[in-house]
Length: 262
Image 1 (cartoon, rainbow, N blue to C red):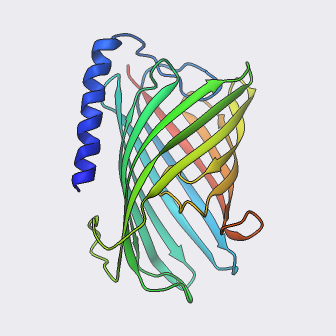
Image 2 (image 1 turned 180 degrees about the vertical axis):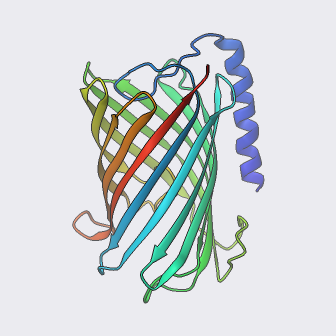
């Protein structure tokens, strides 16, 4: 927890510095295609995933991820995930708390996240139940390559702790450690003023980071049905050490709801 407190103090310092540097730009760019929305007070991401592992085992989970604007320079994002396997409808749950800065100069932002996975049922031959907590800090950049193409990427560091046969739900800071670099890189193509499609490769996304030797590749798409509703979908392939050696495949569909300041 000391590492989490350190991340929080760093973000507090960033927020104060940013207020002195930049007192403008209350409008936020909502997506890589640079469509400018009114100032968004809250967004709510709802999505479902179907996951198939290399052995053909199937699981599914439901996710809710609200994001709250705390100021012009800082956001709070929380999330909860509930997962099921065919033999156990209460197989696992995850939760997270994340702080995000604004995108400085529309190029650079910082993220600090704590997420915890409580795995109550691991499936056939997959080991004992466990709790894993992840503490990470990331710097992310985005850069337009042309009017239609945008590059987005990020890099940071992860502190991860796994405690076997511990299912209390509280985050942990002891047990088996797995600390390493994390990263991702993406190219997005704006196919219309309302939507984009992209490809991405990396080791972290909305919820939990992956092991450094088990990255994912994905194709994704977002499309604005209206000012208040956006389609959110992707197909993800996670490798097990080599790209031609599958670990998991993910099919995700969801919606992002937008709520604006009056």
